[in-house]
Image 1: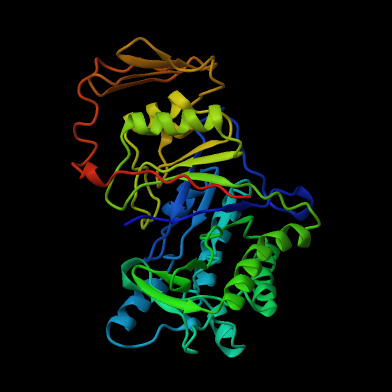
Image 2 (image 1 turned 180 degrees about the vertical axis):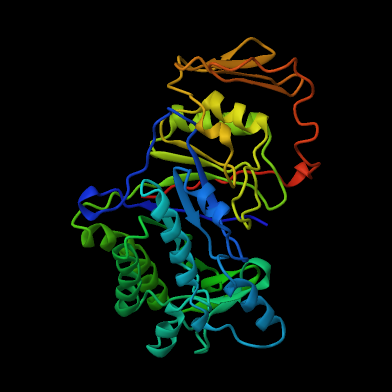
Amino acid sequence: MVISAGLTMLWAAAAAGGLVQPNTSLATIPAVYLGGSGPPRTSTDIDNLSRLRAVAIEKWEGPCWDDCIANQSHGGACLPSCNEEQYQLRTLSAIGAINPAVVKIMYFNSFMAFPYYEVETTLVQQDLLLKNLSGNLVAFPNDNGLWVHVPDFSKPATVDLWMAVMVNATQTGHVDGFYADKYQTNITQTDKGWLVGNKGVKHYVSAEVAQAWNAGHQQVLHRMVQTFDSMLLHLTVTLVNQYWGSHMRPMAIYRQTRDWAVNSTIPYIWIHPWGEQKNPGTTSLCTKADIVAFLLGVEKGAFVSCQGWDPQFANPLGDPLGPAKDDGAALSRHFSSGTSVRYNYKQDVAELNWANTPPSPPPTHDHAGTRPALDRTKERSELYNSR
């Protein structure tokens, strides 16, 4: 299962608006978090997340997702009164109370209307959900078979509502940006008509509705910039992630990070070595090889999402003294603090030597005891960017 199919993160980095700007310093490892937790997060979870550069809370935060799936599996309905938004805001608020410098990102899909979000109530009451040619609501399954609707952006009132939700969220002081999933998604023309669907479920709408929907969908982005008086910095993030249950190989982590630094005009990249996003964020899932591979390619603007905190993220790093050097068997790199990394790609062995600490012991095979055996056939990365 792919974690996301098209991601645009909007980082509102306007000091005048009181929104936190991303910290791209390489004084330490630029670690971030992208995920959600059904069970309540402990104080330890919140404290660890507050140590990261940015935290993006997913649609799984709190009980709403699990309750919705359970209800639908028994023929019942999901309840907007669950108010998924409140659980995300509660977590982001708690993180910001400990460390105001964390960039706090809320999940707000721009293509799918999740029926356990409070905004669903307004969408239903004001007839702002998309309907197909037969006059029925467009609905299809998403992750884990949870059925969702589609906001009808062909109607200006829907665009206004989406704007209001995001503006109101930032005005709480607990949100600095949005995981605005599916910003690249449009209703597409096929030989059978204008198609909107997901996971094999297909609906068709008229050409007039489709074209108006596509225009309205993009208008949401443009109006965000206008609403914030051009002080909203729209930063497109290249997100490299994996299928659930899979894990990026070290050389893939290195190449994705390096290639972004060398070739991309996208300001930021989030490297997400692990596909699993539903966890409390207590501790890092990254192995030593993951960290070494990331550091071999890192430049300012790159972040690594290890799904939690690791004390080594606070160790001194510093700016790289140059690109990684390849001796034909291994890549190595040094940083201004004295920290150095080396990855032998012939033997799959990683070395990480922190400044002012003893060097790593003689290397054994790096992943023993740290990385579970996983099906590599599902490994892939997705690069998305839009303006």
